[in-house]
Length: 485
Image 1 (cartoon, rainbow, N blue to C red):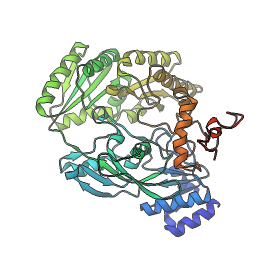
Image 2 (tube, one colour):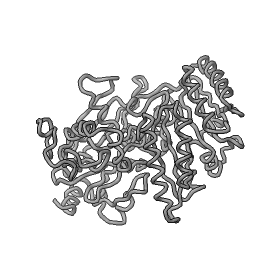
Image 3 (spheres, rainbow, N blue to C red):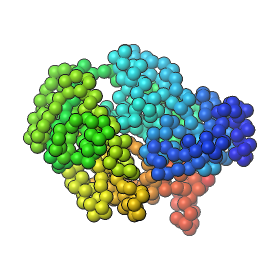
Image 4 (cartoon, rainbow, N blue to C red):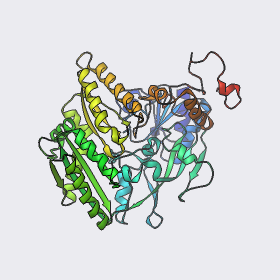
């Protein structure tokens, strides 16, 4: 079936204004938050209900047309990058909170609901939704599920997967099915766990049951200034080693502080080569004891100034600089690459020094702002695309940072996902057997390879094997455990 014929069918099943084929309208959706990659989709569908999502996917399956799901489009890995010959299914119109049950510590929401909205409506009942990506004011729950989104407070509370207990999903053949539910766990294979973080390759979420967390009795936020990242990294390791698990430990280096000051005037201590934002929450007595311990450990590791938020306004001001850091870098550089990798927190000082060495050797600046508590780095590689060669050097440095993460036993991504940006790094972290085993899961859900093709894996694998990779049948095909579709 041609795209034109598919558009006619979808307009009949939904409404004409829910199906976009005009090129200028389609260009609105050509990329997600990673604007470096751009693809104009052949068609955009704007379903309003789960049934309409299923109808779109079913039509794609019958026509053999690839499809990609998209939420708010804030992803930073190209996970929602459209397919040039496919359909982009935008779920932002499914934005209803279907039920709020604080007595069960659960909320049921549609995928287009904005992350922060869940906390806003839960707050009057004494609850909130813990995962808090920096884009929480605009990112959608459906996108959070696809990418297993994190955030500053995931050090203590865990990522999206720890807060989703049930899903309604549209499978790649267009069926509506349920995974999990309101209960803390369900018997059988953990299909829910497989779906969260699968980046849209196993289907499309149309309803999400999330776990609500009780608002803490006390929250205390501390800003500690250091002369450099070595001392701040050492303080981070000392805090965790002492048995203190703050809600968040965030680090910013001098360049990211400079950017934040230019953008939002956060008033961080002058002369700081690095700052730590440490937030403690929980019962008042426990927080008081932990606060004294954190203050002592920061001082012992070289903090030359410590500030404590006296009220919520001061707390928001401290966090304002950190939350705005990615966008703020635009004040000091016309272009930048947002990187995302993970290392053991004890390796922070050494890895940050090596990042600086790599950047200096290539004549590139790197601003470091990241979740120090769990070693999730977000180096911002700065460049000017108007200057010949700078973009290539920036990409070289960006890749070297990912190699460093792997070298130190970490990961190529902590929360942004693999998408298209990092698919070619997967073989550096996983063996061929590892990748083929993962792909067997994908093929079980999506044997036609229509759901978000070209993402995560150095594709195609198994479901259309990579050309030239092997001259004979795949070993798993020969043994009878997989088919090449």
